[in-house]
Each structure stands twice: as C-alpha cells, then as structure tokens.
Length: 285
Ligand SMILES: [Zn+2]
Ligand SMILES: [Zn+2]
Image (cartoon, rainbow, N blue to C red; front, side, top):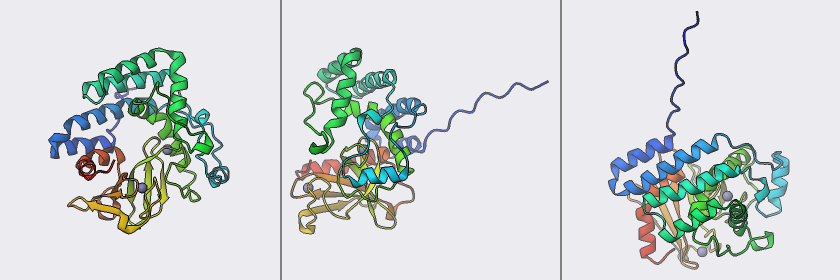
C-alpha cells in the first residue's frame, strides 16, 4: 500500500523578505515601511505566480527592432491583466497602506470607489499606464480622477508588469535603448545599480526592467556636467545618490562593486530612506 504523501513543503520565503526581516532587526525605526512592503509582496506573489506571458511578440529580433524605434515597446493591451486579481490588489494595497498610514483618508476613499466600479477601473489603469509614455507616443498628463493614486496603482500592477519585464529581459538586454525612461513601459527609473563591471543600470519604478544608461547623466534632463551633479554615498559605500543640480531630481544606486549580494530594489529602496531624507533636505525631489 502506498504511504500517504507528505503535505506539500511550504514555499520558501523569497530572499527579499528574509533581507527585509533582517533590515527590520538592524533598523527598527524602519519597521512600518518594512511591514508594509512585506505585506504587499506577499499579496503580489500570490497573483504573480499565475500571470501568463505578455501578448507581445517575444522573438528577440522583433523586440530589438521595436526598441530601435525609440518608443517603449510594451503597449497597455499587451499586459496580461486579470481584472478580478487587479481589483483585489487595488483594494488590498490601499488597505495595507491605510494600516501603515501610508495613504490619506481621502485617497483611500477614492480607491474604494474606483475598485468597486468595474467600468471605471480599466480606463483609469490604462490612463495611468499610458501617461508615462513620451508625448509623441501617446504620453499625457495623468487624469485628475486618479492623480494622487499612483502609488496604489503602481503596487497593484506590479505582478502583471514585472511578469512582462521578466519575460522580455530574458530575451533582450535593451542594447539599443539610450533613454532615461523605461524601454518596456515608459515608466521612470526609481533606483539604479552599478554592476561589478562598473556599468550603470537604471531600474523601472513600475515594471522593474533594468537597462544600461550613461554612467553619470541625469535620467530626466540628461545633464551630464560633472560639476552640476552632486553625489554622496552611505558610510559603508553600498549605496550612492546622484542629485542633478539642473532639474533637482535625484536617483539612488546600489553599488554592486562593494556588495556581497545582488541588488534587491524593494529592500534597497527602504534601506536607503535616510539618503532620501538627506536629498530632500538639500532641495532635491
Ligand atoms: Zn517599466
Ligand atoms: Zn536633471
């Protein structure tokens, strides 16, 4: 007789969550931001495991040709969104953010309304997605209906968009993409990494794509004048921050030349909250 099979093993915690727990022990003042991030990641993982491939042609030659045209290659209609999963994520992201006091009461109410109205969510998400594209490729001001709700939509869309990014990054390194915005979705970078070979990669705030970019230049205004870029690092040399003295925006970097692990954007973004505070104090945004 067959022995009953053992219960399925608990899926191992992702490395990011282990790192976040460690960070919380080391820096308890970051606990609220860390708990929120862990909660969001757990929700997103559940959905991400069943997101199918994007409906874009994934042949490398096709992707590279599309990239050479200079507009972000992933159209909104390529994104494999399951609308009931997305509605769940929009609502539960807002709930988690409210628990951690990371959303205004008024914005929370707007998210509730949005997630209840099936006819409103789809155009709102499309508007958010397409707003980030360059203007000639359909970019526009974000609609007033959803202005201010971007952090919620960004988190809720993460499993769908990062699935697309993983699929496409497995087939191209975005060689022909010289721009500061994301080659996939058009989003802005919100983190960067310096590789052990001293290359600089930008990381998209929305889909997590990574692409190579000039060593020094500002991704927003392309200022590359060394005397008008202010750079500072954490004491351990693991993180750097480059502030642009022309447009006053800044970007943080994980310095892979001094690291014992790979960059983990969700972890590193929280580990560097003190750098953000320092940047804001110096007038960057
Ligand atoms: Zn992107
Ligand atoms: Zn700039």
